[in-house]
Length: 584
Figure 1 (cartoon, one colour):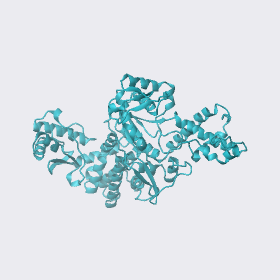
Figure 2 (spheres, rainbow, N blue to C red):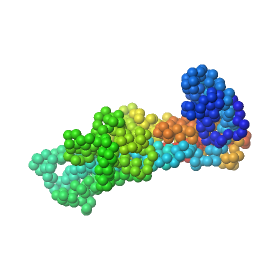
Figure 3 (spheres, helix red, strand yellow):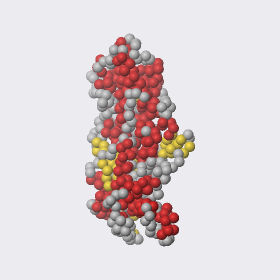
Figure 4 (spheres, rainbow, N blue to C red):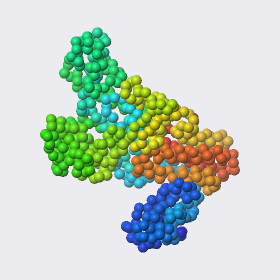
């Protein structure tokens, strides 16, 4: 390894990209390869700390390609490698040809000062280059309260938008309101039944609308008046009580009653969903209504576009989209034989509208029951010429609520599920959001309600928040003793030489890469995992080293490390929508 003849380009925020560039230059020089033949060079954090801070397997990849020993290739690359000694203390070749890097203490010290000087923006990057990305999530039917799967989707989607923005993407969030179709009719009919019940309770006879029974018998069978696949939850009764007092409610015999219940009922449910989401800390950039697609002829335009692409045929009086041409297992009906469009055609029109709005990439978060819809929607995007990567779908898996290891019973209010509002009432916004983000989105999640409420280190959310609050206590204690942390450029971070100090400082320096990686991989759980690791290292450092009361220079260095830890925890919690309290 050689030092560069002159200072390299700035590597402050991304040692990975700097080292990847230096490794590529060294490999080209050592092996005589053309730069365009070089594979992408990736650097990862080794699992074993004695293997360094960053490592690459590029020599193994190149060795196989050029039929030479990977270890010999690694040795040739390292001989030509030029790196700044402030960043890299030493380079080692390990095993069959891994190249391991140990980061230098001067660079680590610089990172602590950088964090202190950029506390409001630390963790941001420009890897997204301003690319416009839309993230659509939750998008639950407006016929009931949001359930815990919707709550998980809300936490994941909101965090993903924040991460994308931090990584330099122009990201926007959207909720798609399915305010058209059969479910709206069923909801209005269910509401009408509950309104008629209320009228009966006031002494007004209920017509035998459902069973054909005499009115007095129908009155006893009121529950059965709900239409097949209608809505039975207590929330329907609650809404009916509200609407019963609305002077604009048309009379039961009025032909305008159905339209009123469809319009006002859906408006009230959407307003309730919006309130619950805002309590959960989720505010959408845009709420898009399916009804606008129907009103503006978007479905007809989508059908015409697919037909023009030569991917629509008629069979049995219906119109079929040839999704099998794009890998689906069967073609799909988009226009029924009676001329009514399917939900699939409305969804195609909706995504055509997204493309027309100029989004370079669209990310949809769907529930597990929509898994089979993924290939057909991606087929539609390709047929419309948007490219294979334009539409990306993440499946948000099921949530199992547990109390004392036992499944939680159904909600009394919703009748079929536990609502987002009930979850926030019981455990609070912060633990709920943190717990939803502790596992991969496509993995089932067991949510322990009792653990989420605990104010102990066993609760991961509390554990991380407590580390932030502990730093606030340390800084307050120092001020009571007349000690204030110096300006960022004057903090002697080079004095942080103990293993616990170095481990924590290096982890903090990796925050920008962790954020960018989470955004690019669409994996917000990387942030919660990272924050738990930071909290763990900080608590270990705190228990083994005094901060206030040691020699002045060392005290300033440790105060700087503590403050940098607090900044990183706060920034990380902000990205996942969790508060960072200063007292607990």
